[in-house]
Amino acid sequence: MTDTLSTPTSSQPKNDSNGQPHRIGDEKIRVSDLHAFYGESHILHGVDLYVNQGELVTLLGRNGAGRSTTLRSIMNMVGRRTGSVVINGQETITMPAHQIAWLGLGFCPEERGIFSSLNVEENLMLPPDVRSDGVPLEEIYAMFPNLAERRYSQGTRLSGGEQQMLALARIMRSGANILLLDEITEGLAPVIVQRLAEVLMQLKQRGLTILLVEQNFHFAAPIADRHYVMEHGHIVEEIQQHQLHEKQDQLNALLGV
Amino acid sequence: MVTFMGINLFALLGQLLVGLINGSFYALLALGLAIIFGLLRIINFAQGALYMLGAFLAWLALHHLGVNYWLALVLVPLAVAAIGMLIERWLVRPIAGQDHLYSLLLTFGIALILQGTFSHLFGSSGQSYPIPDALKGGYNLGFMYLPVYRAWIILVSLLVCAASWWVIEKTRLGAYLRAGTENPALLQAFGVNVPLMITLTFGFGVGLAGLAGVLAAPVYSVSPDMGANILIVVFAIVVIGGMGSIGGAILTGLMMGIIEGLTKYFYPEASTTVIFMVMVLVLLVKPSGLFGKEA
Image (spheres, rainbow over the protein chains, first blue to last red):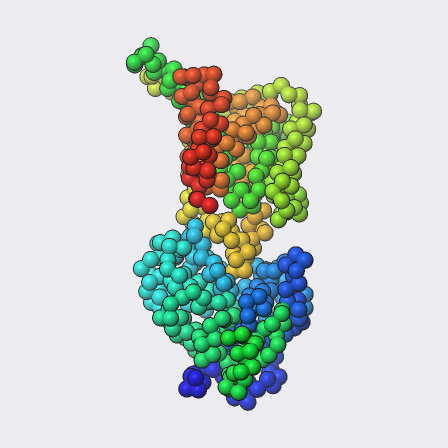
């Protein structure tokens, strides 16, 4: 695991990743005391987290800990939310859901959200260009030849792995530079998971900021800069990449592995 | 009199034509209902009343403001669409997400209010609207006489339906509509203003009813209950075509008009019920409708 630590990380100095306060300008996401509700159920109980420019941060935890809800709350896709969600220095807690993407956010839902009434290319072109420097369609097709081959197929006819690539490619094309990815490796073959890890590393090299909800710790550990562990609707632990070894037992206990 | 195996071809073709004209109205109204149902998941019971409103607005505009048919053909659908958008924004949206029964009762109530208002103001006897000069007369097709206005109805309806289908199925705007029908929350998370899209879609759907109303004014009598009569048939058509299926609503509308016409010739007694019999059969064999996706 140690050799993967040398993979490119954010441009910040090393000592900056020890939980020291960061310059506000570097913060892409700052969530404070976030509560979320679905009807009468209170799902998130005061989540605090931040993600810096160029970082890849994971949200770990058991099923039902509130990781997906955290992502959906940042997108304002939950019934009700309170607290503070600052994106790129801008408070969004009262912002309607359709304005949030325009701050550069791209969301990849757990169920992938491929539209069956749209073909592959229509799925790719669906998200509006929220920023001007999205990956051009030709480049997307070069990265994912399978999608190019099947561009006129119904979106949901693709294999699970292809659908996941499509869900990722879709938000890359829109120019989003802060990606919220929910369980992107779930149910996929190891070779596809490996390919996804490569894609995420490419995105990091492009300087994108990524908040990743992940069950597959072996996938997340080598590519992430930091990890948050969630339990019962709040963050219970923050682990720096270099602390992974010393905190392994604690982490295993928290994740129940 | 030309007959073939005991069938009077002239009379049969005449009924087919009447069927195709009725089918044109069915297609326009069913298309509007299907578009609204697709995105809003509500069954708009006011669609018939808004069709009636379209016919009445055309009639009022002609008799009180001197607005001619051609202008009405453009302005009235826009006016009905605007009224529809107000209805969506101020009445339908507050109950969005509630049980379907609420929107059903709401739109049914709107229909009754509109119908009652026009009955009160203009009585329930029909008003007549003259056929515009340019569309008077007819073509002698040899086997039958085709009034120009009837051909016009079919032409406009087919063009509008085909254009709507093309926009929905083949353009980027249509992709938004289809995506919004499938997963509005995710579409909104991508940055599309879904609430605005819903308002505009509702406006477009009822605007189609307004257009059908203007087209109908010169051929059917303009009366407060004209919408109620046609609406139940149109609902059956949407169910036969498959709830929310755009192409299905259009094709089934035309098809059911023709089937009705054929029934009028072969067994007139069944002509008012044949569509419902087809509906029962379709629901028994394919509950999701002829063009609907299996749930």
